[in-house]
Length: 72
Image (cartoon, rainbow, N blue to C red; front, side):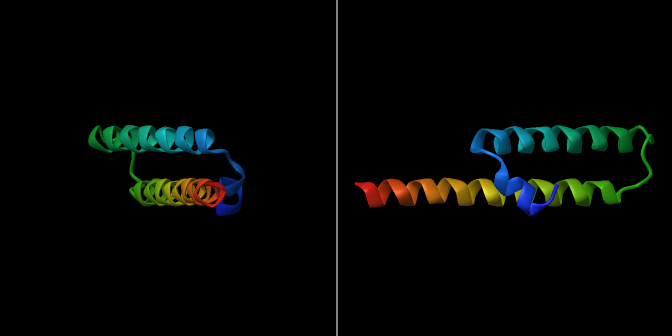
């Protein structure tokens, strides 16, 4: 998922996306441990997506805090 697509998601959707990605990462680790997966680059891709989604989530939260501070 690209950054533009992540920015279109709401905060709740981003949180759910991060949880899903973390589950995928855990399942991939189990698959590696049981020799069911050979492509280890999958870990890097999932971690990158988690980082991107977390960054967008933090940006959205910061924007909300700034709006609240301005309105007070």
